[in-house]
Image (cartoon, rainbow, N blue to C red):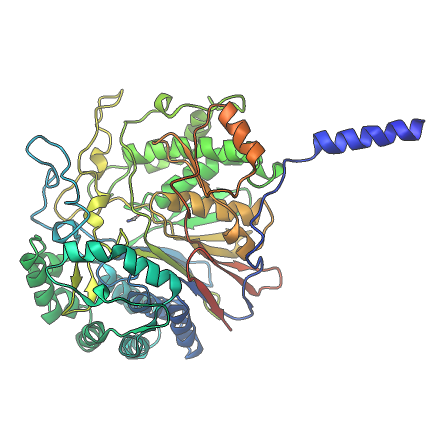
Length: 567
Ligand code: GLY
């Protein structure tokens, strides 16, 4: 009888004490490519392969970065670019860290209200489609600055395989066929005539890029100045003017990439190294992780009710600050130390309770929504010498402004849309929300890109990042937590279903049909608004994890055509 009672007690305890159910998408392989020496993970196999070939030739992670970035401009014109910009953080084998900002800038002729009509309303489409949406591209300046400071191989060895790839062409994937088809009406709207991308490309067709190859050949011959001061600059400025834009040769000639110290912070025994403003990524990630840290999140199961609550409430508060405080540090004062201090962040979470959702309307600051495009691309590289880079690059929207310069062979960004076109109302302190990110000549627009490197106990642990607009930060966060707190491998962490909260709109976006129904119902009962409709995919995370035996596991996101290549 006693034994029976104990058994009942054990069963009752097993049912009531067991952690909430773990829901992980099972159909994708849960272990990524493992390699001993080096790895590149990017949105296309061709770009990862070119990066690895550079490493095999004796190049380092920075040489491979230049090659992979430019190969993505060929193989992944959806977001890879020379008509856009990005950010990269690095950690050298000796522990030195750094970051580079090759974000686009607003042209000299830009004005604060350039996207508003006479009634101060935002003119639909003006900051997203066509030449007015274009910011001064930074990618060529960025990769040349990296090569000059940190690269080993001659630039010819790096650019030649990319040029050959452009001539040889890229095989269209199923996903690419769908993407091109989806955007073709907009290509016709943005361009005066049909372009290469208005052909009916089908899966397994090969698209060749001779115009882009020729542009890259001139850049190889004349260096970065070709793009900013040479024939390419002249063609580009003329093309933008002919299409009603305001970027001039002077704008191009004045552009410079900028080295910036990354944001660093600790989370338990991790040190996180991420991008500083004008990306909001590092600051926001620091705020969220530091708000989460006191809750010992690993005691809860992955994507369980309480884990979702803690993460959501930290995200809500961090995104409220993001909208208010962050912008280009060359133009605005950002109270960085305060924003990521433990004292401030503990205070921010002090009104959180597991009993009910905090409402975003009760969280200061401002009332400006974060609306960002989802299309960007990320790649991670670790070389055979132990150097790691994490780089995120973008045209902003899918194929950027959709404006395609046929003579030069590339799309132009629509990054001007990442500025606040219409700063919001004064907050309780009388400050204007989003003023920090208003448009001004030569200013860089706020970004969410979060290229991140993680150390554990002082050693390289992970390189990670993703596209996804405002969901970038929360996707990077969840991937790090999946590995570190929820004990997943890199690929498993990348596969796992993701959710996102960004303060406004006050909703938890979830990848549909992948979360536990009972957790969703509980969340609703507690006052959370759930949206499973608007984010079929949240992020396309690419990452590299250092395993216990010092080999590398790649996580390449099946949500795209992303591929890890290693040796
Ligand atoms: N355009 C996307 C970002 O910069 O976050």
